[in-house]
Image (cartoon, rainbow, N blue to C red; front, top):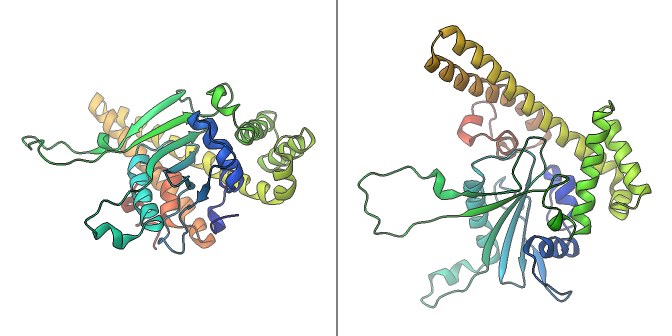
Length: 308
């Protein structure tokens, strides 16, 4: 594999930490005709070198494009900001910083940002997130100076969504089928670990990601069990917070009280996420940035519960 992923490994990042599969995936996502001579170079951020900043996948295509792909089961509106931080680090990694101070223009790979969503909540086929949506308004400030924006293409890859894209990549199609099989097992009443184990067995027998699952079977079971437990726990804790907040708001007896109560409940739900999972993840060596990413929170909200 490429970068040292350690605990940040997921089934998705492990599957696509491979130049051949990445080329196939990028063909599917871009719709472009990239032949076998296309040069894919993985430059995913390494935790050791970049101060606990680790993205899912980043790579260059023929040194002309730099592509960042994030895989998420819960979409945070702060993804554009996070990707801005990632791309700055990636450019720092793949360019000559001294050349940036030369007078002659230094050409750099054009960036592209993609999020692949496969969570349980309803989500549109495609959505565009923009960094500029987060900018605070500055009334009276003249629009005379340079500005900044970053757009992220979010694609729903759950079964029945964006099938034209998914079907163009056998690896992505296999991944979608595999995750679907795990969830099917859960619906049928299997425990999470049993559902994952059965999905691995089924896919291996039916030639779905067979070489990958055969060589990574136990690793996949451990990774996916952790991922799904995290996803379900966060969803439950946040919903508990919202329910408590709505109850408190109703007791105040006015609409504005209900709104405020729900907001406080949401905050309590996020607090439950951090207070419950942060100590465990810290013991495992997981960074505060990854806890924040999983929970959809801000770093300064996490630091009280997760010392780095």
